[in-house]
Image 1 (tube, rainbow, N blue to C red):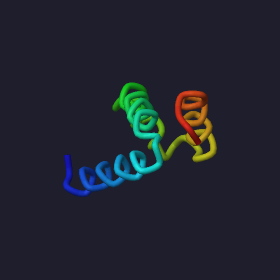
Image 2 (image 1 turned 120 degrees about the vertical axis):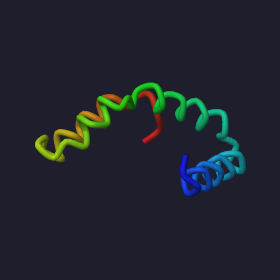
Image 3 (image 1 turned 180 degrees about the vertical axis):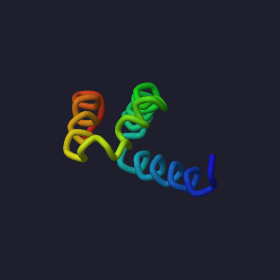
Image 4 (image 1 turned 135 degrees about the vertical axis):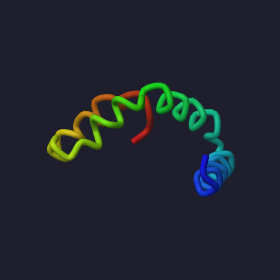
Length: 68
């Protein structure tokens, strides 16, 4: 894991803790980790698929699983 991702993650969880939503953010992080497989990431980063369709696919996947 890169140094910047560690710093970003630490900052995100510090802000979540301060806001009292650290457990919710941790649960959502686990959801993201489980659904964003390498195959799915390749699909949504494929420039042959129109951006609007890729955004729609991500929205459908995450709808009701994480906060907007």
